[in-house]
Length: 310
Length: 101
Image (cartoon, rainbow over all chains, first blue to last red; front, side, top):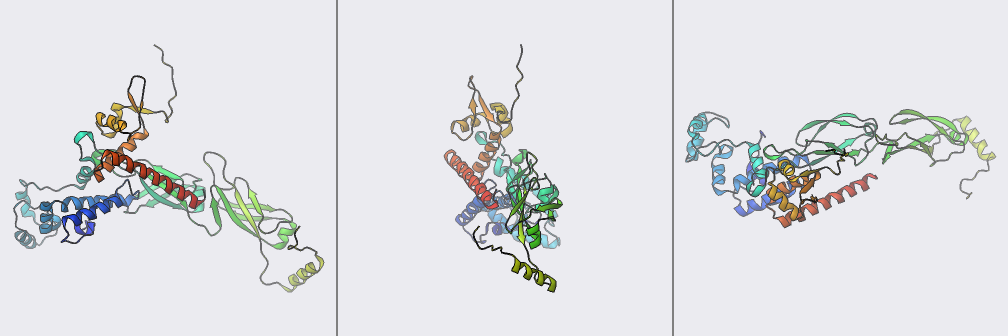
């Protein structure tokens, strides 16, 4: 964690907050971001941040040092005057680690650079008394949004989790909405070398302008011309698996669903879903003179009344 | 001596107390105590030895984290675990309802 936030900011309290306020802010944030309560991978980082801030600010002595020396407080030896420290840093013209001259003097002091991993280990594994060992990492959950085509074909996908972590996922063909993909060992980190948790990706198939997915079945609209519905026709239809031919039976009206067996989402462990093409009879917006004449002739000849109950 | 070869299914797979203690980092006595308190599931064989289903390793991890994170006592641990499970079930049901599965 290179860019560390100010501890007060992390807890959302002012620099003059009382110990009670600090405790209250921490408890609230801990309840929100504890990895067993919040499955978002980002929550773990946030929990770590607020826990570290609380560990420092809940102890009046450590808090005093933090107020005096800022993020350097762990490197400054005991008994150093804050003004002297500030002058020494300014004199060295240095960045955060500029006070090199203090480092030798600090060797004997109680402060050392504290590794965040150690600290996290302490948070979950430090309570060793009476037989509680280091705690394994928590399972996490993240949403994996796929297009209908990706769900149909499967394949590799690079996923960027909130918090910047990037993972490559191999998606099996035929995943469905709500399905969980388990990535072993990719969840929360364990304390002090304990096993990490798993990351579960929950699949969500994104809305598609043409396809509607229901379980493994896919629904798609099939626009046809009036004469194709009346006379029957074989028309081509784009499906997630590629173009396919659909036979529209004679006498097909709008709303009729034609089932294409097995053309829905594949199923690695059984029968694939079906594809339902729902017929929609479309008429030309503008008729040519000839079309106009033919439709008028049809209107005059036909006795068909779609509003009369059959 | 002849042993019958029995196929072990993952459902039946279980660890004895020592293996469980090693896998979870819990002291065996504490693991025993958590079973007695109903916080961990284990079955007892005819000789009285405890056998832990593999799923209990994750449960133990969650107990450890919740206890460390919130300083919960045993009774509260049980309640929080039950409530979290209940919420997870409801969330899954809600998700399935939304996605029409």
